[in-house]
Picture 1 (cartoon, rainbow, N blue to C red):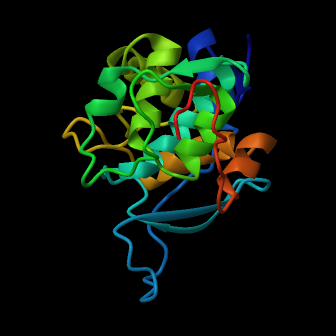
Picture 2: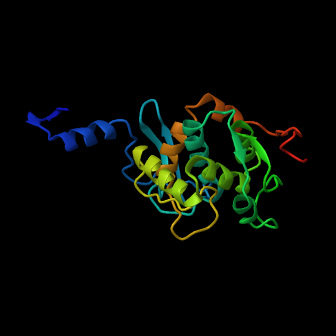
Length: 212
C-alpha cells in the first residue's frame, strides 16, 4: 500500500490509516446550541457526502443502555445463518432481572431460530435474547463482548468499550454519539436488519421447542 501526501510516500500503517479515515465523517466541534435537543450528546451525519449536519458532545463517553443491541444484532447477522436454532440456557434467561429488564418471556431450554431471536432482540428489546445470542455466537457473553469491541474498532469507533450484549449498566460499558453513528451506519446497510428494526410487533409461533 502506498499513498503520497505533498509528495511524501507514507509508510504502510499511515497509508492504511489515511485510507480508512477518508470513509469517516470528521467532527471538529459542537454545532450551535439547539434548545430542542435535550440529549446529553447527539450526532447527525450525511453519510453520502461525509458531512456533519449536527453534533453535540459527539465524543463524550456515555452509557448506551439498549442501543447496545444494534451492535449485537449486527454481529449476529454477520456470523450466523438465520435458520440456526438458538438454545436459551439457564444462565442467559435467569441472569436478568425479570421485574425490571425488557424480556419476551422465553424459558430456559427453549429454542427459536436466529431470525426469530433477532426479532426478539430488536422488537422486544429482550435482554435474555441478547444473552442467548451472545452465547450462541461466542460461547459466553464475556467472549462475545470481546468480539463486540473488535467489531467496533473495525468500524472506526474510538470512544467505546462493550462489556455485555444487552446494555445492562456496567462502568466499563460505554460509547459515544460518534461511535454509535459508525455502528448504525453498518447496521442500517443491512436490509433485513432495517426491516426487523422497523417492525412494530412480531409473534414467535408456538412450536415443539417453544411452550407459549
